[in-house]
Length: 214
Image (tube, rainbow, N blue to C red; front, top):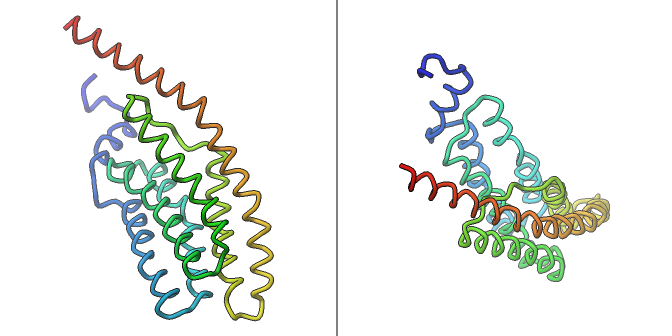
């Protein structure tokens, strides 16, 4: 089929596939660029409340860049890379920062980040073994979204605002189920990982067969 006969939607995807200057990539870079400001608010200005609001805003916009890319067909290779990197950086750096700041107990920091480390190591091993990439599960999205709110609430709860106690209480109410969901999603990746490994091997076998045929 000639290029001019392709559906408009497919042509758009092809046009934008390798673009760098897209709105979703700009949103991801803005979110990534907020991390130094967040650290400055906590450690230089000692303004936990403002830092909590910034972190909460960045976490709440986690879905915007991906939605925009799919809605307007501006998916790019850079976006596929920078979006998950930004999500993990915002969460990991933020959690470590509030641990160092003393706004949350270290056991919560360790339990939260241990799951991220385990999933990251499993992903690297899967990639080295030739497995396909695993998409984030629904439970994983719920857990991440919950943690994006739980930790800012706990940070605001450690501030000197009049409703700090309310923020602290709400933060713990959100944090506990979010942590449970995060480990449930990690368990889901075990069978998904075996499937991805099997599919990756099948893909390589098919590629080898086509090469032999050619």
